[in-house]
Length: 100
Image 1 (tube, rainbow, N blue to C red):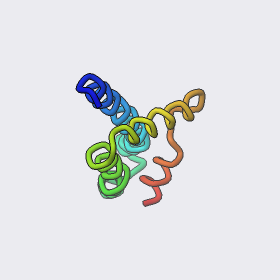
Image 2 (image 1 turned 60 degrees about the horizontal axis):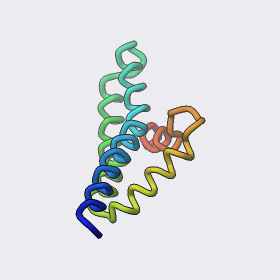
Image 3 (image 1 turned 120 degrees about the vertical axis):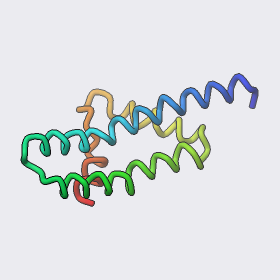
Image 4 (image 1 turned 30 degrees about the horizontal axis):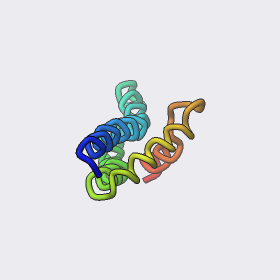
């Protein structure tokens, strides 16, 4: 693979990782909003953050740091396309974080 192509793959991987992480953080943001409104306790919020770190955040880290970048980019792009037109919320990410 040429240096130019490798650089393009790395740039695409950064963009795909950012988008997947942004989507995975949506339920965490919602939990912070509930916490600020007094609907969720500090302990519940801390537990959700811990589950996010151990689950979706770790999975994405491994995907984009230890796997083949070309496959990670392809998956990230296909997932973005599949979710385009739907709500920006990722039901799978919601389930993984909120249900533990």
